[in-house]
Image 1 (cartoon, rainbow, N blue to C red):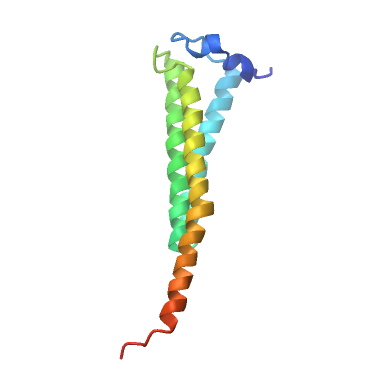
Image 2: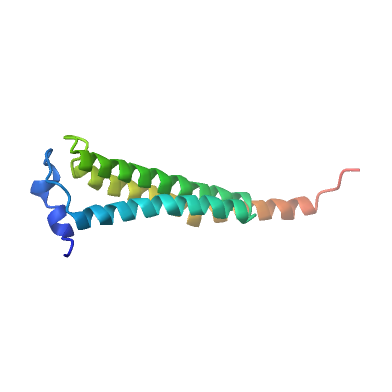
Length: 138
């Protein structure tokens, strides 16, 4: 009862427009992964509402929310197409494109988190320091 991912992504099977039905284990795994993404996205949105943080944190959580919910729902739609055996839309190469899209989107969010947010926070700190020495309005 093991899941063979190498067999699942074999090149000869990847572009088959009439793919064989998913095994029960693979179907369960995919539903759990995609469903977990949706749940994580909703949990991130709830956490954003409960944790009163700064605007940059809210932007970051919103980016993770949109990523996880969008990719989770797209994955669940793909699994539904597989179950219904829709010819073109249930092909396995869509899953490869989904993984590539997830990686690209995740890298852009991590870049925003590690590069852009610290720069913006640093700019605000410099601006506050500069304004500290300006005369106050009367």
